[in-house]
Image (cartoon, rainbow, N blue to C red; front, side, top):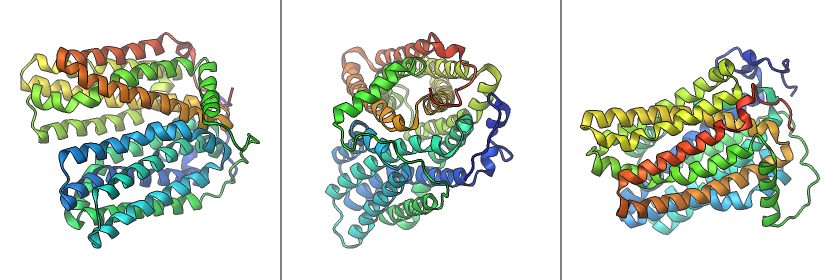
Length: 432
């Protein structure tokens, strides 16, 4: 399918989120967008459905639920270490279809086992890990596939559209999972989830544009060699290198919140679980706003400055969380809601910019290894940060450690502000 062309630097066209822009006439992108939408909602149903199945069907203990949660995080590091070379040596659409089918097959086994009264925590552990690994591989391949489907000048618009869908899924997916579980039981809800991945695979099969032939890379390469290529590409690209270093810092310190946020809100601030759930849902509202606002922000102040402003505001908003302990309950609620709205809004805006830049400056044959290397590095530091935050909160107190986490996150944003990206008016329209 022939791609729509536009003059270089014409940001007014490529930033349209609503019907009328060139991507709304790009049938293959619309199919990929539908794939992403189905996959995003499916991922949220899986995230909520597997623990609910464990609790309602097997009566899992808190320790078992903790292990189940850990097994959903592990694949990010494992697949990040191993998948880059596979993605760069293969047709990306084939990987996307295969991961959809794997997720559908694994999830379909859960209701079948429940119906036969065979369902066990061991099966749920395996399902959580395999589905998590397939989802990470899907994300890496999808990130590498998009630039070959559309013009690079349309990447901001495309990533913003995909970000809108992901934000809506984050808001509505957990609620949809709860409704499905309540009306159909947890195993049947997971069966519905399996069907969503089959729908996703069908949409992928309907994309007509031929995928470019993978470059003639070595058929086999060691894991170390693939990671070395990915890291060398990142560190050798002057626009991406500071973003990568900042992401490492933010992954380490931002993970403090992953281990302490809920317990801080419940114990230190006195929130009820229901109130905390509403406040967390505000993050989905903020994420939707960020997906909508970044294109306009980029048009108004320039692409690089828009990333910097987004990073700084998102990082600074983390200071509101430990600061919530400084006042009464209404003050704490206001601070936590503001942190969710600002943090998720500008955090998503920053990620849209960073993703668009990576897809613009790296050639297609490197995108898989670049994405895998970055995911592996940030995933490893996030695990370290989550563990460190939990241990340090004991001797120093949760509020102090959350302030340290917020300061570290903001420091990463300031590092971006001092980088050459501040002079970038718009992303390159061809790989450098």
